[in-house]
Each structure stands twice: as structure tokens, then as C-alpha cells.
Image 1 (cartoon, rainbow, N blue to C red):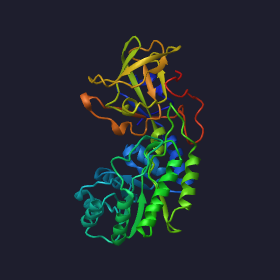
Image 2 (tube, helix red, strand yellow):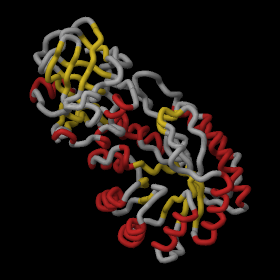
Image 3 (spheres, rainbow, N blue to C red):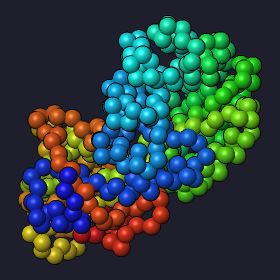
Image 4 (cartoon, rainbow, N blue to C red):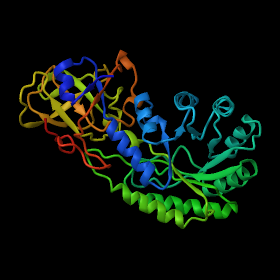
Length: 397
């Protein structure tokens, strides 16, 4: 992987044909150290957010030692790269063979369930092991989150209490977990969820060793800045102190987006301009899934392929490279007038669920990766570099 001062240098020296992920390791380090040093919960990185080896290595180097895996492949990836890592299998629905291999081949002892049937599956697939840690995922409100996640997983109060009682009979350690949704913009969401969890624990009449407050911690994008991360810490800690749990109960969390969104940007090439309509070499089937399907505004900037000075800002419609006519950014984008074939656009803070969501539809999806040393995008973890661009689509060149 080559290193450049900025994406401008990539354009000047390479004129890249493929999209380029611009990796900023210092941004990963800043986010990871914040969670390790300032957040009172043990962070289990959600591997699904970005499983790229260089991102995982940066997290490990910054002190992250625990990982939330959703599949056997993610477990194998982490186990192979970091043999000493603590891995939790936190998908609520798991095939029996995956549970068995996770336990026997990879040393996984932490599993989640939101049904009695899944609990029985875990117990049976591990041979009625006595060293299990079972988390019971409860359904909570997702108010204030950009992507609610309550519909598919999570047990209701009565069922969750029953699962807790049964889990206590089988597991060495028992905990509760929940997920307030992705990109949760209200710290109070955790207060409500933790109060709900505490009531379920009381109804179950069992001791609980772990409270896992899940993911949902936000990243900073263009449309709206989230509250300060310290506000989330304060809310979680106040709520944890009021929960009906043992004094020595552990507090866990599952950050994904918040850890790696700032890790990468995406440099794309303009392949055709039709007036104020641009056709670029990435889109909804690539790393810009959220920009299309979730209508998220990423910070952007344009880079002239021939080093000319770019001028006033105008609105563009932007299409991706596939033959699907829905492969189009949901919102118009403000960029300098006169963009044409061979110019480039950089989408910032796309390190979470960017490359992880990319497909090979229509034969597209290949990309290169380079390290860059600038810090132009908004951050939640300390100051940015000298070269600062505006929020939202209204970026500077």
C-alpha cells in the first residue's frame, strides 16, 4: 500500500482508473483510543462495519482487543489475524455448525440469543459446555436513530425474562444486550434502553454479570453533527449506576461506525459529464450504498484531474457506473462548476459500511487502497488538520 500526502497527490501522480479508498490510520487510532481510554465499557469492535485487514490492524495497534463477529467467516478472520483476541458471536440467529465450530475451533465462548430455541441450539451445539457466556438481546426503542434495528431481533420483556432464567441454569456468565439502532443521535436512547433492561432483570429474578449496551454510537457526516461523545458516556454511566445488577457487573459496547467511519474516504473518477449530470465509477452497488439507499450526506470535495482551478459551486445529479437507472445519489450534490471526464470527487468519512457493502454487480466493485496523511473531514475525536472542507455537499475544491 503506497502512502501519499493527500488525495490530490494520488490524482497528480496516478490518475487512478479505479476508485481508491484513502486510508487515514491516525483517525482510526484517535477513535479507538477514545473508546479504550475514555469510554467505561469494554469495546467489542463490530467487524461487519469494515473488515479490511489494514483497518483491523490499526484498531489492534490502538488497543482494541475484543471483537463482535456476526458469522463464522468473521470469527475465522479475527482468530487468524489476532490469536489472542476475545471474540463474541453476536448474531442472534446462528447455524448449529457455526456455533459448534466457533466453540471448538476458535475458542469462542460468548454467544447471544433472543429466543429459547436459539438458547437451546447454543447449549446443544457446544455439548452442554459449562464455560459459556450468554447474552440475552432485548427489544428496545430505536427513537432517534437513522437506521432502526428493532424489527428483526430482540426479545420482548416476558420472553427475555424467561430466557434469562433459562440461561442462568446453563451459562457460567449471563448478560443482557440491546441495540438502539444505527447512527443514534440521542444519548437518551441508552437511558431508556438500560431502564427497560433493568426492569427485565428484576422480573427474571436472576443475577446478571454483563450489560452490553450494543452499538449505534454515531459518526459525523455532513447533514447533522451528533452530540459530543462525552454526552454518550455520561448518559450510559448514569444509567448503569441505576441498573439492578451486581456491583462488579461488566459493561460492554459494540461500536462499529463510530470507530471506523473516519478511517477512509473514497476517491472516484468522473467518467462522463452531461451538463450538470455526472457519471462516476462507484455508486449504490459499491461503497456509496448509504448515500443512495439511506440518503445520507457525506462530506465531499472535487479534485481537478488536470490541476486547473475550480470555481463556483453548482448542483449536480450523480449516477453510479452500473446499468441500473436507480444507481443514483438520492440527493443532488454541490460541487464546482465545469466538472468533466477525468476529474475526481472524494467522499469523506466512508470507512463504515462503505467497502463492507460493496458488490461486484455488473463487473464493477474493484478498488485500490492508499494511505493518505491529510485530515480534511469533520471528526468527533480531536482536531482535524489544517485543510478543512465545509460540511455537506457544499464542499470546497
